[in-house]
Length: 366
Image (spheres, rainbow, N blue to C red):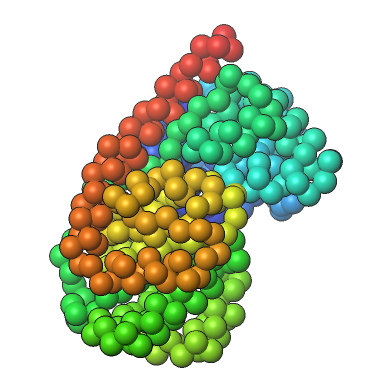
């Protein structure tokens, strides 16, 4: 089938959908306003770069988008992100048309003003079918626009790539707490840093020998990088904290395999699905997550990980201490987590689910 995506090329989520459909033998086209990031798009996919940048481009590019779609003549149009590319998708007037919601587009954007809410509702209404990565985000979407035409398709992972490998660390005695996230306020990296420092301090005061083994690993780049490095210095943990910066997605399994505990304590509901969490679980790591958005949805509490209250530094520190002190618990949660991901979030199954939605919507519009 001929699939045309309207989405940001800079996002690994876009890259993975484009590559997956290309690898399945579909003819794939990507229309985008964003430059490709460090991740590679399948050479069989055709990319069209729009000249007018976001955010005005979400409106003013619609004439060229219509022209491109007329040239491509796709079987289906699939826009990702309801507030931006969803506007372009609506203005294109093309059908069959699927719109995937991502998070802040249905959580944060509608709250900015009545006008913003109206834009989102119009964009949702224009689609023939809606897709969400989590049940909690599906409910949020339905609160804006009730419709039976919506599917939950997780953004799963390839468990062949995300797997536990033998420990390659020079110092196998270290206990590494880590995360792989964008360094922005939404993702609560500051909460992790404070909790790690508090956990270490508590363990030192309690004369726990493992306190000296603790290390913190932060993988990712973003606007808060300098601020977070300064925070680590203020809390006297800079010498045991490593900031790796942004890495290509293909390298993420290597970094996850250098960790013992994974922490994702985001602070906003728009954290709609925990891709990074299931990547960590697939690598055999116990996880600690906050109770926001779709994060608890991908964790089996006390079996694959621990769930803490949002913005709860002391609670997160207690969870870190619990896992640091109990190696057997860490290993059992890691084993449980990988099985949970294999059963529920295998990427090949998710791609097949999306193909089924495509076929259904194409049949509907004939």
